[in-house]
Amino acid sequence: MKKIALLIVVFILLALAPFGVKSIIDEQVQKQTIVLEKKGVKIEVLNSKGYIKTQREFELTIKDEVKFKKFLKASFIEKYPTYEGLIDSLIKKDSKAFDEFLRGIVFKGSINNSNINYNSDINVNIYLYKFSDKIMKKLNENKDKNQEILSFLEKKALAFDLVLSNDASLKKLTLQDIDENIVSKNSRGQTSNNDLKILSFFINNYSQKDLLKAKINLDKFLIKTLTSNKESILDLNSLVYDFTYLNEYINSSNLKLENFLFSVNDINLGVNGVELKSKGEVRSGLYQTKVDLKTNSIEFSSRKDNLSIESILFNVKLNDILYDKLKALNTAYINIELITLDNSLSENEKKLKLASAIDNLALNIDEVLNNGAGLKANLDVKDLKQTNVSFKNIDLNVDLFLNKNTLSFKTLNKKEFLSNVDGNIVLVLPKDDFTNFVKLVNPTFGMLLSVYAKEQENDILFDVKINKGVITINDKKLN
Image 1 (cartoon, rainbow, N blue to C red):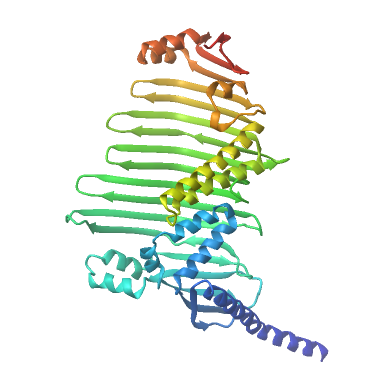
Image 2 (cartoon, rainbow, N blue to C red; image 1 turned 60 degrees about the horizontal axis):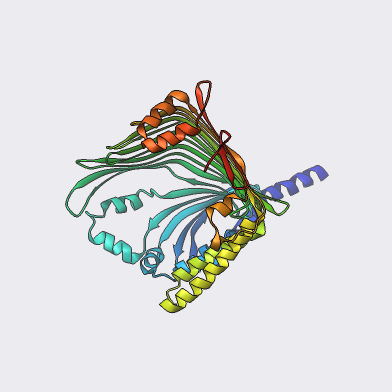
């Protein structure tokens, strides 16, 4: 009897569980509705259905574009606090057209969740339903001219799928594939055929409380325009971008791109196998940043010139910069931008404020310079061919250090700067390529290069040493 009673209790709990979970999700939706309303966005649940799984159809409208812009600004400033004043200045600019565009935009979609497992993800589908009534009226008044836009809306072409955790934080955002062919006419009656493709674009969000972390994937982005006499193409394939971001200085990223093609009129640029890595960090109060770039091939052509490169390897590292002084320098620069954009100031007031701000910027530059810094870089270029010049290999290594000093930005000159720099620069070129290059350049410059060049088997070596303002090239002093 006890077992039967226990089974009945379990059955009742299982039967009631969906109602309990549904109530919790409803509460979450209601909370988010109130939060978004304060940010200028109205959410209305149109209907709700389902027992084990619930689907809520909703409509989202930007009711107050001013509140919505403030929300976007706050979200941006949270990650880029230094730029708050600059954003304020930009917002103050005349944005009537943009405000009218935002006001009244309507999205529709559905929220789907399981009522059995409260910890399961919430799936949201959302698409652009229409623009404001005012804009839609204008579009419908000339349907023939605006058919592409109206068709785009009718097909729900701009749509997103979102995966949210049970606390409503974003886990994944996917843009539904866009594959559109749009035929349009310009004011002169010329017809253009336009292809737009955005395929397999999604963002996986792994962010923590104070650290933005995500992975972006894009299989294809294509914009192709064909008219009677010309074709333009922007084609990007297989992009993957991983990044972490604490602030504009402390961050890291890894970008991989299979290929990229840009073509307009007679200018063509193709790049294959790109990998770009970067990292910025602070150690013991000193900032360092590094960038590594690798490409498999580059092809460029125009009416006047052609260039091809088999591969490029490039890395650069900047280190030993006082972090606090670097941040102060950036703030000083932003302040100049703010004054420049401030239309409330008279010309005289602006000149006076700019003069003071530039003086402050110079002081901040001095503080960064005076502590010194290190620079290391390496460039390896394979099989460069240009219309008149070719190099099978270019190998450049840089290792320089700016010592602690008393330099002043306002009075800085080349000689004084170099007297505080130590290090060396080494350039290696194939001998035959160097010989051909010298024949093509200005004779005086070619002679100067030959004087300092040093043969090393099948290569030409330039070993530049800098020590307290004295520069030597292959042990020959540079005057």
